[in-house]
Length: 568
Ligand code: ATP
Ligand code: MG
Image 1 (tube, helix red, strand yellow):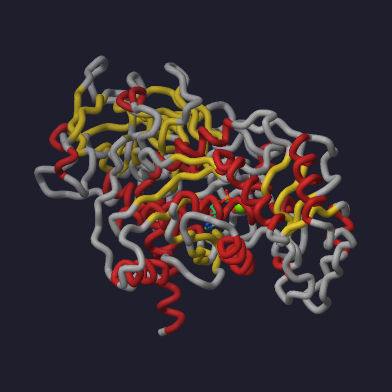
Image 2 (tube, rainbow, N blue to C red):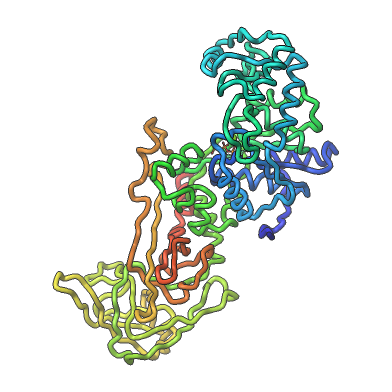
């Protein structure tokens, strides 16, 4: 795998995490930076994870360090191999590589267990027989201290014996837990004797039935960081209040290194939910067709929809790394994606709502190959040949029988340019018995071949077209936001009440130029004048399916311009 990101030199001071890293290298605190991306394999990665991936792998790349991929697989009831495979594929697709540094928290289960035993021996952990509900009840609140468990002062020997029997499988799920002996009166609830181990009799995707006690996130995470020699353990803000616990465990265990945790603000996006719990519900309740349904905010869905990885990386750079929670407008993501596609996507012809055009004076049976540039913004993209003939499809919306003043496209008696082909003039409108327009009869000017008139006259409109005899039929899927509200669920109602019933529109009977039959999945093109589109994996020879990646309208640029006007 080669990565496509250029090794851009970083401007110092770009964000606070990079500032810390830079200072630690300068002061000699660390010779080499080691970061990690620690997904739990309980779902597919979403665009919020992409932000964290770009940060962790990006820092490692920029500062000559390395970034580990570590699966935080401590919760066997929710984790699956399918997710592990998808996560690896998504990170690679985003353009990052962990080399040989692939790890699993489950690789450390034996070591973590030993360290738990050492905490017990030091009198700093105990086996609690309270149920989860009882523990919660006694935890207290922000204003009230918690209450100590009656099992808190068990002798060390009894704790060791019980913990060994927990591991041996003597007790059912939830019967006992191992807790750190910290401070039930701490103002930080996370320090009120947090649970370190729980009993779960479940098959683990990697360790099978070897274990029936599993470490909690808090007990596994920092210790895994220490085992791997992570220097900067970067996570999201909700873990800020866990940092004293992170440090306490590192201080009280014989770990081989001393990682530090740093927190940054979660990435949020308007019209989107970014919680795996909700995403799983969307899939399980059938609101979408799967994790990679193009309306989902998962990385695999964005890929399927035709978003280039570069656009997602650019967005991560644009939004930066903040210390305060914020919500990014989805239009900004679209803007970043359009900027890449405008540069890279080849232009093609497709007609989504076809209306037949017959050029009466064009010889029957004649076919010309007209030369069409692949990207007017990039001459190096070359050109292609597109067949032109007497019968064509144009967009129904490009014709009006009684055009209003500002409609410059085709109308009775009016001349327009067919892109890269000829000027044509509409002579007659053919309707069916119901009065619906079914065909336009036109004439053409042979002197305008290639799309320019020798006498310099210029029609006000240029239309795209496909030759009816050569066009390839296709289904085209248009997408809108999955949630209508920019902040789904913010009014206190059920998030799912806000689902957009029109988030997908399927168009059948569209026609695309012949070259598009060969376009591989994974490539995005611009259908001229319509937007960016890509073949969907549902495509089959003879039954093409395209996704609309985005329309051409950059609403973010517009929002920005409006913002400037408003403040001017
Ligand atoms: P979710 O809330 O979607 O379930 P999670 O935090 O439970 O996400 P993990 O698999 O534990 O999912 O996340 C792996 C890493 O990605 C963590 O370091 C986490 O902080 C980071 N991450 C998750 N969501 C976001 C987000 N919205 N913005 C930035 N980083 C995120
Ligand atoms: Mg998590």
